[in-house]
Image (tube, rainbow, N blue to C red; front, side, top):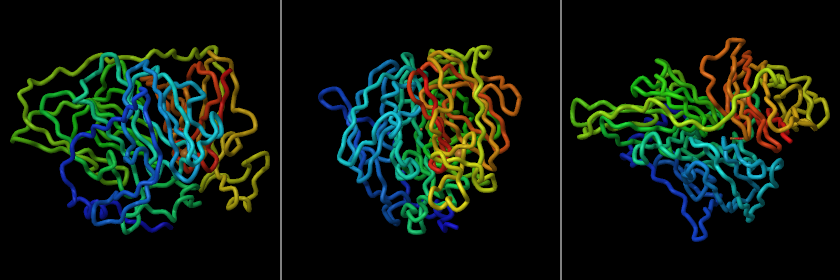
Length: 472
Ligand code: C2O
Ligand code: CU
């Protein structure tokens, strides 16, 4: 077993070093020719506080998270990517219904960008919302070392103004006793066959327990992004009196009251919230953002509410919608996706690169999970359709673990879970599927190209949970 610091103990040590932090106002430096430059490089950084060791992080433009890229809906992004790492990489724009050639999947939509190489990403963002970008080459290591950042696409008429719009990128790092990123466990068969690389140190915008200043009575939009390799964040909204605005970049038609318990945010998922803090009794008041996946509440950020002269703002009642067509279920093709493998699951009957794996192959191939019996991309796609075809994907999780299934290039609606139809058919690009669960999702395959479909628990993807589909 990997030995690493208990995150509660760690937080207690780290907390004293904290100062109140400002709202992150990250912006990508614009070059003279109107394009952006994004640079991946090694950047040692202290994650746990000044008393601890610096971690060997790999970052975009030297920041953790990478710079916030902000665009307007319909805008064209021109981003020159420069690889200063000593291994190949590529950049994926997660959740964007993007031109396939710009999807950034190394080995499928582009060649990996070699060390010292560059790649010009050039695409239009059709949808507004909360998205993110991350490395898509050895993601299990590159994302865990920090190669990700937020990508925000603003509506023509935003829900709140820029000063009330906060992005909170949450990551779950695994640190060693000295506060350094735990390196020996990278690629561990234990993680790959179980829940993935779970960490012990949660950061929000690269900081431990940052504070955000709010004015009483004003509407704030919080954009939560889970950049963790494997942890399903369980966010406790009790203290916040929050309303839910949307998931995975797409807003609901109307704000929704938050459930009384917690909300799950799987790796790669996003959740947009609206809060309007009450006037404090004293001059100021603090409330926490709490994460409870370890069984007890863990404070990951604070909101400091100050009195203001503003009379309480009315919350929005209707929300801007992206233009997307629901699937036509009657004409849809049905695609079964049987998920098997992993610890405590069936490790036999997995085909990899055309061969049936033996138990003795395990150490060598590290392929442990399968979709429809095949690990890590079959010779032929999971399905191939003409553009405009409706697709109903019927996923069945026969493993002993939950997964976070991501479809590239498309958003889908969840129709049912275990045969129970869902009332709210929210748009998503990543869905959670529990052990023994059946989840049915539907979408129109309207974006031509070769698209990946994989578990976003990045160790699971590396260990077999990847397939693809083709749209002609
Ligand atoms: Cu966010 Cu294929 O990934
Ligand atoms: Cu998984």
